Length: 315
Image (cartoon, rainbow, N blue to C red):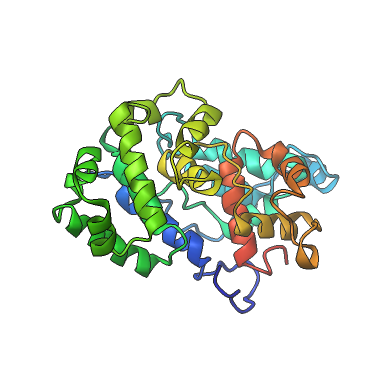
């Protein structure tokens, strides 16, 4: 992960996310389709006008869990006109933000206000045009790389298979020489083996666009199918589920940024060095912290990234 950015004024969001996350997000969000449709992002919001009734203000001051700050209500209202997001599972972003803001006694309400509308579901492509094989290849290529390096390696990979991303198919990969492809694209041996194993899964029918976009497939079943591929572990599978398929309830415990955000937002200490939350030893603690945010833990995880990148988020 990248070195932590200097402290900023309250509510500002870092423009330097972790190298691992920034590389993968570039890989996923750039790869989904040949034809894309951008969801309209909310217009800049004017200075909030406090329309909160005295009764609501009193209830909120007394700790009522179902009354949100007017600034949060304004943010949610700005998202209400957006069409449903997601691929196999469709949901309204305004509903998800409201749930995250209200859950666990409004614990993340200030985070939502300070960090604003999530960009997690912006600039996504139409479901029917998603090429899941290409998307997963890009995830493998971009593992543990910064955005610029991932882009360079991906360009070499595309060139090695004919120079056009549309030519990247399981058949084309399996017809090529693994060592030649690895060398020309600048892939590690592990990544080359992973891409060939992924292609084999598609050739056998274990994976396909139809399988991965099947709305009847549970998140757990999809996770099992993805992690059956060599080189696609829990973290890569979770990232694809969150950013590739836009599943709403994914909690990536293997992501360091998310765990760091939970440490700050919840004031938790873990079994790791300097109280860091450990993926395995603190698993129950992590899952208990995020349980109230189901069925929108993907969105809660996004806000945890913002917390990790913004030291003054609660000030």
